[in-house]
Image (cartoon, rainbow, N blue to C red; front, side, top):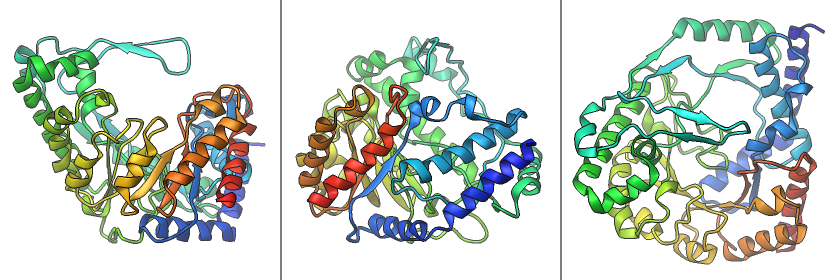
Length: 403
């Protein structure tokens, strides 16, 4: 078969799956869930780092490099719907983003990558905060509309009658700032600067805040934002489906958008330091969004009171694998979505079914009666046994049924 025939066959299957009644049911479930209305606990699996084992390049058939990427995306969506069978929503579209170029902050951050699936080290470029902060400037941003239009035209020509083409993407993941600070000055240096160079660290965080406001504002001004409330992944896990955000026909505004922030890198600092050096710089950015999600893999129990008080229009809160779930459940009290990140270790190492069930039962007990989602992510390997992901979903459904 030609590349075009391969893609059209896959697009046809995506369309068939997307039009199943269960997908419409899931859209309604996620919208109600994110509106804090009663639903059953929802389940999502993100293969993430294990995708090379789940869907290796050897399974791809297209020859053209770009079309192989499209093929992989279609096959991944089919695999999620047919094999994993979680509560993910398969939408009947083929989505494209913009061709965007993003410059640096005025300094290069050299990376050295390991010979595996992701490890690296980097050289933080700012060695002396007092001396080096003046080197920083806002990132240069540009969009290649012609290249974007060529992609859209090619997608429309190949399978537009089977799977309508649309512009839908998210140009950033987090507006949390601390990862950018770590890249620029180093992780230990960020923590030590809170004691040794507080004034300079405040200057750095103020720069990153203002730069991020400029960054997200540019996408809005250029008309490059697309809705992120229609089956999209949301923040650090779960889906963002919501009827409460209303992108207009003339374009999406930041106020029509889900915002997301976290500060995983500062999980070891005191609540007081977090309250001084981190959260005040995140809040003005989160003010721009219609609804917000906070947290990722950091345990929030020691700083959650501050987040709940200060983050505007907060709706979703991450509950990390090692977090104290009961403390968090008591503070959330049903007023926010309890976004539980299940422990991936018993899935990724030896598939310890007893450990998986125990982890799920603790969550279901702690969050009983609250808007709850069970998210399996950070699955950086499944030991070449992709069936583990489907089995985790089955176990989760069994444990939900017994509560």
